[in-house]
Amino acid sequence: MSFANKVVIVTGASSGIGAAVGIKFAEEAANVVLVARNQEKLKEVLKKCDKHRGKAIMVIADVTKNEDIKKIIAQTINQFGKIDILINNAGVGGKAAVWDTKAMEVFDKVIATNLRSVVYLTNLAAPYLIQTKGNIVNISSIAAVSVTTPKHFAYCTSKAGLDHFMRSAALDFAPKGVRINSVNPGPVRTDFVQNLDVGKNEADSFWDRIREATALDRISEPDEIADVVLFLASDKAIAITGSSYITDNGCLLRTPFKEL
Image 1 (spheres, rainbow, N blue to C red):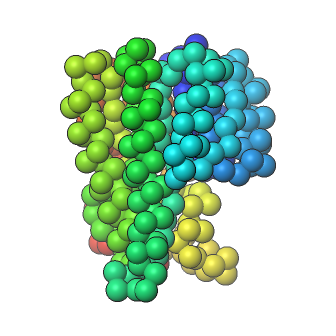
Image 2: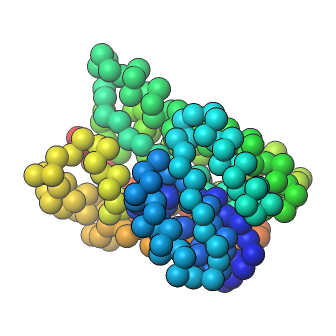
């Protein structure tokens, strides 16, 4: 598939799934807008994108800030004049039981990043996506479908809300010719695990437990998730909207995780 001359915004693009998605789009000749807070990491992703035919730019932004979200749209339009595809990937985790004193602090942070930012960025991108009859892919999680581990109520709630927003938006967008879908990964080998408060000494044991929780006895790599994203963003998925694609190595077929 080719995305020549398509303009793609990817949030959370400095590492993991977001970086893999940005690079894959660049390989397919897309013009890519890489968005993240970490400038140094984003520069490394930009270098990899620049090896390919499409043009890539980076926008340093915190998606929890309204002005930064406006900046993402403004810089994209100033540089490329349009938006064809929006990949809402930026996300954070946060560990707290409902009764913890820090529960609401964790909840507000997670919802602001994983849900509110997506709604607002979609809102601002919508007029441009309607013009191009473009599409949106949200990076959700199997946590939207099943509460897989304790003390992550904020994350699970944010992803369930994200999927329901996707379906609602799909119904609104459909008459305009704009599609919106989600990819719901299970375990993926990324730096995101650091947000689950897992110390370095626990890392090997952590990944072993995660792998054993999948039916296929494996953990996905970011490139595997990126392949699904590109399919959904392509014309090959022209009949697909309002759908969630679970890519979890059969994790949901197994029993829920113990506390991580």
